[in-house]
Length: 237
Ligand code: URA
Image (cartoon, rainbow, N blue to C red; front, side, top):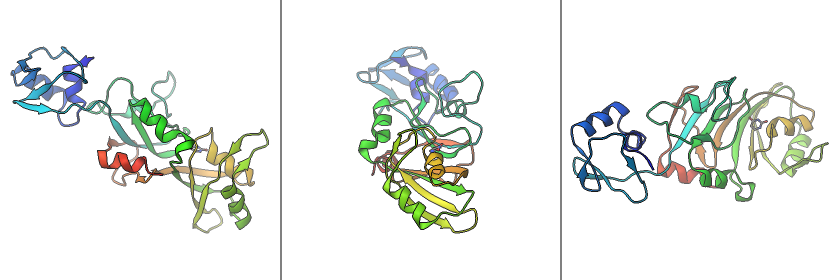
């Protein structure tokens, strides 16, 4: 059960202030009866809400694409650092938001923020082979041998096994730009993979989740809701 004003504001078309206004004016009904109390509790599964007589299809969950800046941590809350959830604007904010998969503090790019635990599990589970695409700037050149090692999968000195990756050189310079696609999200995975070949990641950016590219219109720190068609793309392996 959630407050009526909060639910309506989280649907993405009305601000919290607009919602309060239309409720006060008696333009909102709950199960057919006019409601004037913004705080009334609504059950998304069973209640019917209408605005100006038109039924609102209430979305149960929200899915947000963020272009994470450096220096922000992938968490819901933190005493010391700014989190990706802190950057979510009021109109998209709701209780229970968390990042589906973590990027390191110094990594930039696509973070999916949601309140849907099942969905997060689905896209993160290595079993489902949903590839996450990263652009990595490296300190040294990458040899064909290194690429072969990364594409086969690696067992690190501490016994951690890292599944096979897809690797492509985008800029073949002294500090090359590499596209690397992986379908699991172990701690510092990309950095550790390149470290295992004697290299070092200078900067790292996630550009894609599944088949969905980070929207190039989103400036660093900005976010927007993911559409239902885009959500299907995220789940494509
Ligand atoms: N791999 C890393 O090493 N860091 C990230 O932030 C994401 C993947």
